[in-house]
Structure formats: C-alpha cells, structure tokens
Length: 484
Picture 1 (tube, one colour):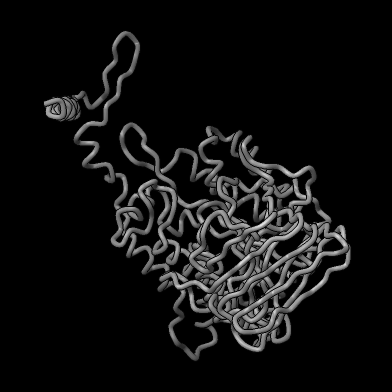
Picture 2 (cartoon, rainbow, N blue to C red; picture 1 turned 30 degrees about the vertical axis):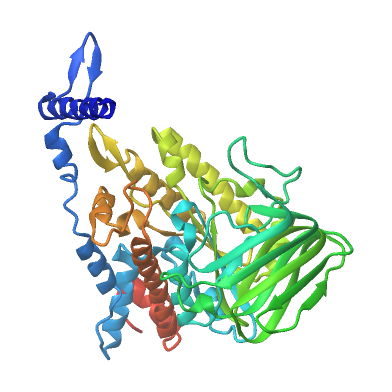
C-alpha cells in the first residue's frame, strides 16, 4: 500500500507540472517584483526554431568547396586557389593572407624519409578520446607518410579510442591546472603535456594497439617507441618488451633537463611493456613509425589554453627540439565562455592567449602556430536553446588576435554553420554532438577533422602547383588576375 501511495504522489507531481507547463504565461509572470519563468509547451516543442540550418548541406558544401573542377587551363586553376584563399569560409585563415605560410612545413613533411616531424595538437575536452586529432593524423600521414598514435602520458586519465594503456607502480601524477584537489608539483617543470608522472623506485607502463571501431588504421602501425623524461637519477634504467622481441634495456645519464630514449623495431608491434627503475619525471611516451609525420593529441579537460606560460621554458624548449615539433595547434575558447559577459572580458582573454603565442614562439621557434576557435555551443536562454551570448564576438576576437600575431586561424564556429548550428548537430542522425550542446560525438568530430584536413591539403596542393610556375607570376596573379 505504501508503494502505491508513493506512485500516486509522483504521478500527481508530474500532472501538476504538466498543467503549469501548458498554461504558464508565455511572457513569464511577475509577482511583487520577482520574475517567474517556466518553459512553456510552445517554446519546448519549438526549441530549435532559431536554427533552420541543414547540417548535411553545410558539410556537403564544405566538402565540394575543396574539389577543383578538372581543367588544363592555368588561369582556371589559379582562380580556384585564389578564390579558396580569399573567400572560402572553410579555409585556414593565414596572417597577411600569406599563401606561403605553410611552405616550410610542407618542404619538411615531404622529405621525412629518415626522420619524424611532429604536430602537437593541444585542446580542451573537445579533443578527448583522440577526437578530431585522429582524423587529422590519418589524413596527414596518408598525404605524406608516418604511422603510430604519437604521444601519450605515462598515466592516462581519459581513455583513448586509438590506444589501450595502463600504468602501475610508484608513479605520482602532477598537473599544472585544476581545482584545489589537484596535486601540484613543487616546481614548474611540468613538461610538454602540461602534466607529468614522477617516478620513485620502479613502475610498469603497458600499451596495446586499439580494437575500437573509431581507431584509424595508421595508429595500429607502431615500429618506434620513445620515452621522454627529465630530472632523472644516475641509475635510471628503462626496459622495453614488445611482442616476441627480447627485453631491451637502456640507461640514461643523470640529467636535470630533458632526455629521449628510443627503441626501433624492424616491423610493426601490437603491444609492449615498459619497465622503468630509478627516479625521474616521465613527460611522455611516443608510439610512432620510423619516419614521416606524427600527430600528438594532448587533451586538457577544463583548460582554456592560458596555462602554458606557467611551464618551465627550458624543459619545453628542450623537449620540442628533441621531438622535431614543427606545428603547434591550439584549440581553446569553449571553457572560457561561461565567464565571458562583455567585450572587456573577451579582451582580457585574448590578451592571455596572445601571451601564449609569444611563449610558444620562444620555446619552439621552428614551429608554425595554428589556433582553432571554439565550436558553436548551446545554452538555454529563456527556455530556448541558443548560441551562448558573446560567442560569435569571442570567435571574431580570437581570429583577429591570432592573425595579428602571425598565427593561422581555423574558424570552426562558422565551419559548423555559425550561430545556433550546434542544435542541428545534436539533432542529426546519427548525432554529431551530444545533448550537452557542447561536445562532438565521434561522428561529428570525424566530420570536423575531415574538413580541417582538406583545408590543410588544399594549401599543400597549391604549394605543389606553385613549384611548376615562376614565383613572380603567381604573386602577380594573386594581386592582379594576370599571368606574366
């Protein structure tokens, strides 16, 4: 009998709320100066009325914009690239419209037969699980060469679709940002990932190629394993056992700076166990091919991208140099959005981002910088899901500060479809974004990664075309629409 009464009470509450929902005034209700609001039935069923965006059309148009109609006419070909450089909303915006911005990068990548050049993709939770990075990695490695998942931490808090790993032993993880419960180090040498694991005595780290349905093919091809460490004791030893290969030990001389230990294999391996002994700060493990381009995913959940200036410059500079890092991608902005209330708060944030640009130019001067702006984000405004207020202004300001500082910019907000597009990404079948109206699903992240990759590839195609033409002719055409 008691359970029946509880059920009747719950149903009564639902019925009462339903009646209020149907008849509550559309323009809210004010009693003694207090404004009462209740989402009305009409608003709820029409919560997406602000967005008439067809996401399939947006993505179809984006992909078609990368297709150059076959033509033997040199003028037509140059016109395509000129229009792409200046008008295509899916392009990577370049400082001063300098179409040669990525040329030095392309020269390295297409001549990487005997070395590895790295792209570091920093971002917030939008790139967790290797989202976006995985598609970018697969496409760039297909375009040039390279294999492997790239950089991973010793202790992985958020599982990745691209690699399985676990750690045990005397490792303590320190991270440079977070709330008061986050364990901080007594120094600023956090390393290239913004967090590190301190080894005391011994520990074991294991990895295995992923069988996840969203794992790309190239991440399963690992033939080089490296360990990036620092501040190690004299007796530091690392032993690696992979597949059926014998255990290979390496020692590292005492070093307060960064060191890199590397194991090469004659074929691809599926799993490995790394046993480390002594004292050291473990910055990263790298799972790569023997050459080509590596794309490292470094997701910093809750971060707004303003932490890097707090990390010891010397350790960062040494690490980037050891790893041949040549492109830094920074994808931030979403986590700052809740505190953005006016133009002044936007200006304060962009000044912080500008300081990060200057920091990276100092610690990795050989690298190009690319900033990816925030995605569209939805929040409830008077009972209706809409784009966060000030988000379009934040996006424009981040683009402006990037280009003024010789940093390329990719406008993900407008690539998605612009204001209120996130509603349609959530409603798409299959869903391209989650019901929090912030994060992409794997399907949505793959779409974003593909558009970004194709934009990058288009600049490479233009670079290859320019090899066959006199430089003066190209410059003259871009400026004057004539060939000379």
